[in-house]
Structures are given as structure tokens and as C-alpha cells.
Image (cartoon, rainbow, N blue to C red; front, side, top):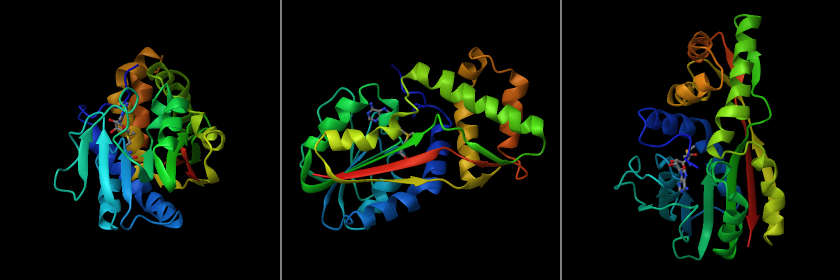
Amino acid sequence: MTYAFGNADAEAANRHRHLAAMFDDFSTARIAGLGGVTNKRCLELGAGGGSMAARLAALGGEVLATDLDVRHLPRDGGFGVLEHDLQREPLPPGPWDLIHARLLLLHLPDREAVLKRLAAALAPGGVLLIEDFYSTIRMGVLRAPTPADAAVYNAYHDTLVDRVLPARGNDGTWAGRAHAAMLDAGLTGVTTEVHARSWPGGSPGALLQAANIVQQRPAFRDAGMSDADIDRVLALMNDPEMVIRAHLLYSTAGFA
Ligand SMILES: C[S@@+](CC[C@H](N)C(=O)[O-])C[C@H]1O[C@@H](n2cnc3c(N)ncnc32)[C@H](O)[C@@H]1O
């Protein structure tokens, strides 16, 4: 099963930039609330563009950032970099005080088994933080230029989560099972917080949708969307008159 949004694509750098703008403040605050990272060994999995790895390093963590494709990870960011397939390879030797994976496990077919391995790699008192979209819950259209625009956006959402992503091994309901999976793995003090907010066209939350559509345009066509509808959604994602509530980010943490 091939990851849907590979880093070799021209849109990947845009995606990493938009994700950082959407979620780095939230993830950083969440990690602070879980005890912080100063002088702790941190594993940032599926690190993408490395923005969270850089933040954890700046906060005093000793950070190793891994990714299937490390081309967007700076080598001078104050953290280590390792090319690593979480699905197929053993974890880098721990134990780890913090393991963070944002928008990664939802893409991995063996996510439940992966979570067990992550839990087992924690140091006593260590924290596992998994953050994923609950993407089968529809993104909200908070305002649209016309009712037809709202309808075409909803049709895009349904094509994305019912057809395009599942064909690449993505499970849009996994985020709702992570809490139970952590308890089943023996973690304690498990908590889930949910992040969501409004994003007008042209802002990071809308431009993330545009990056995803551009990268997967052939798949949207194959799933039955017309080029006219794809182009309309792309235009809406750049139109400040359109406002969406993007996917809900479930942020689930547990302690070893
Ligand atoms: C949606 S991006 C999220 C990037 C970053 N975690 C963030 O939230 O900003 C998913 C990242 O996971 C990486 N990835 C996908 N499959 C992977 C695997 N099997 N092992 C490690 N990384 C993987 C991708 O290359 C990509 O950089």
C-alpha cells in the first residue's frame, strides 16, 4: 500500500508548511501539558518538514526525527534525522521519554500493531502522543459563496474520505480508536483532546486541501469527480468568501 501524499511530489513542501501553521502551536501546548521535553529523549515519527522536531529541540529535547522520505528534513535543525519505515522496520533503539506521531498512523495499515510497538518502546513514565484526523466526520462548510459551492465542497470531502484515501490504506475512523488502543496497550492516564477551527480560503487549513487535491488529482478524477468540480474546489480554497472547518484532529496521549 503506497502512502497517498509522498514527499517526492511538488506539493509536499506546501503540505508540510500548512500542517505546521495549522497544528504546531496546538501540538506544542499539548506536549507541554504532558510534562514537556526538557532533557528528554524524543522520537518524532513521520516528521515531514521537521517543524515539530525543531520545536522540541528548541525546548531542550534530545530529538530524533524519522520519515520514510527525509528529503524535507533539515540536517542543521538541532535534531537527528533517520530515514525509517515505521511500518516495516524496528524502532530506533529507545527507550523514549516522548514518542510523537502526527498524521502518520492513520496512513499505516498495521496501525494497531505499530501502536503496541510504540507503547513498548517508552521509558517508565514516558509519553506516547498520537494525533490523527477523524476524517470520516465531515469537514464543516461554515460559509460558502453559493449553496452549489457548499455542495461541491461536501462532494469533494466524501470522495476524499470514501474513495481516494481508503484506496491508499488510510483509515479515517482510526483516530476514534486510538484512545482504546492505548488503554489496551497498557498505557495509563490516557487523554484525548480534539482540535478544530475555522479556515477561510487562502489560509493554511484551506490551502492544505488544495495541496492534497493537486497531488491526488488523477485519483479524484478516477473516483468520478469532474475536472470542473475539482477546479471549483481549488478556486474555493483560495477564496476568502469560503470558510471551512477542516478535519478534526484527535490528539491522544498515554503514559508508560
Ligand atoms: C501527512 S505527513 C505529516 C507530517 C508531520 N508529522 C506533520 O504533522 O506535520 C505524513 C508523513 O509521514 C511520512 N510517512 C508515511 N508513511 C511512513 C512510514 N511508513 N514510516 C515513516 N514515515 C512515513 C510521510 O513521508 C510524511 O512525511
